[in-house]
Image (cartoon, rainbow, N blue to C red; front, side, top):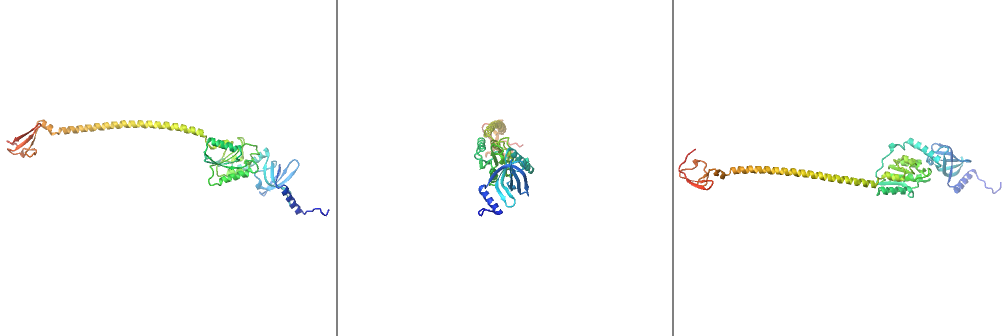
Length: 375
């Protein structure tokens, strides 16, 4: 052995190797097929990542597992190559996700079964949405066609709503964490929106994978704000949509489900105005007819009262006429009074040779009493 040949102790070599790998490959993405997958103590993950020629031992925490796994699935893992001082070389996994249509479908099936058993998709959990809402919390990418379509349809159908946007990535590794954070932020506000809307446009199964991850699905299910989710096209169905209170087939359909069409609403208002106008004139007509009938009745009652009073007045006039002294005098009677003007009612009230005045119907007489005869 040469004098200047470098010799490491085992521990030194492990440390130097890990330092070299940290410098050269601080983080690595690897794709392969899962073999020998197992979970130890509900805490640690162990599996092999293989291709046609090689096998790589992988190690990680269950917290990096965002979807159920089983052997045979294709997986993309992110992590660091490490040489353990006791257990040898392995790939320390920090995150992972299935790739390929078959593996994505299988992962979704496994997660669906798990969450279904927990009741996350039960219809009894579904809540009704405010219609139309005054305030909408929107989670999507501000640069996406889904966002543009949603805003366009909302404004065309029912403008004036308050829309608060949480701009997030809607695909890729960072997407699930951003979506979950946005849901949490909306739920923690003092004045939360009436509805939480999560949308993105169409894409491949891999593009839409973020909305079928366990963390996003659970965040949607646990939201205290009612949720409306529309991911992809009508034929696409994500787990977040299953967990939501309401699912829309497309982002544009989500806008339609939330708002009435103001054209239809204005047409209904016009019909209602016509109905109210018709009812108003019908009411006025009936009221006028009722007033006319009352006026006729009042006139009849007034005429009846006038006639009755006229009859009473005539009776009183006839009685007054009958009791008029002149009418009595007209029949040949006279009114006798003494010289003081006192009316004489009895012969006992006069004496012989007294002067009496007799009032006749026409004129008066003065008479000298010559004879008195009692009753």
